[in-house]
Amino acid sequence: MKLHKKILSWVVDYGYMIHGSVTSLIYHKPPKHYLNYVLENKVPVILVPGILGKWGFMKTLGDKISLAGHPVYIVPELGYNLFKIPDSAKKLRDVIEKIDTKKDNLKGVILIAHSKGGLIGKYFLAHQNQDNKVLGLISVATPFSGSSMAKLLPLDSIQELTTDSKIILDLEKHTEVNNKIISICPEYDNHVWAEKGSYLDGAKNIGVNVHGHHKIIFDKNVEDIVLKYIEEITLQN
Image 1 (tube, one colour):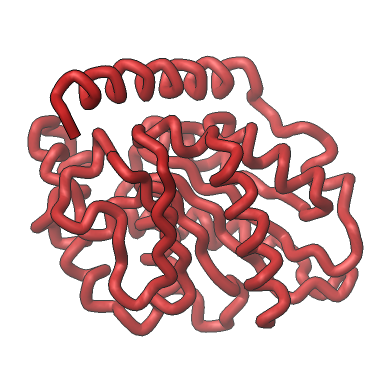
Image 2 (cartoon, rainbow, N blue to C red):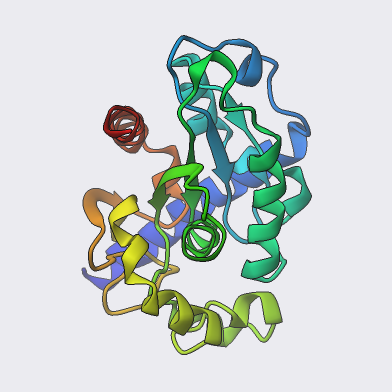
């Protein structure tokens, strides 16, 4: 991609980042319909945002999933998602254990994640899903191989995302869970600086014509793809 197009992509993407951040500040609690509008045999969904993003960053996507009849849960204990990935996975576990999947004959739970949220989701599948309660993970713009951009920010919660970090190397070893993951990859990601981008060997990888790490979570086509694969995972289980 030419330099001027990359610069434009960064500017536009940061506009979406600001939009998502403002939404997070406005909406402290999810809409009532997230848990009150539930259609029969619709699997529960949990939103797992990226670093520095609260659940509200994913509200547009969450709204669409909810209005399709799925109960939508959030993980408020994550805050701005600055905890280490294993600790975040434990907080996710706490929410999952409170979901009564036996009620209304629900089959399990699907994770919908953005960026670092996908790493939390994969860690959960690899280390904490012994009961197979989580049926699958749909991740958007997740740096499964890490991102060299993380080296520019000397914070522990961000250094965890470097390509050679302990947690990234651990996750790369756990290929046995990759077939439970659907990775949606933008054509150009201004935050995931890695050779493979969001591509994950053994997963179902879906490339989309979107330029921007944050913009992708607001893309209408991506919303449709997420809904499609929620239904596919549900039918497979």
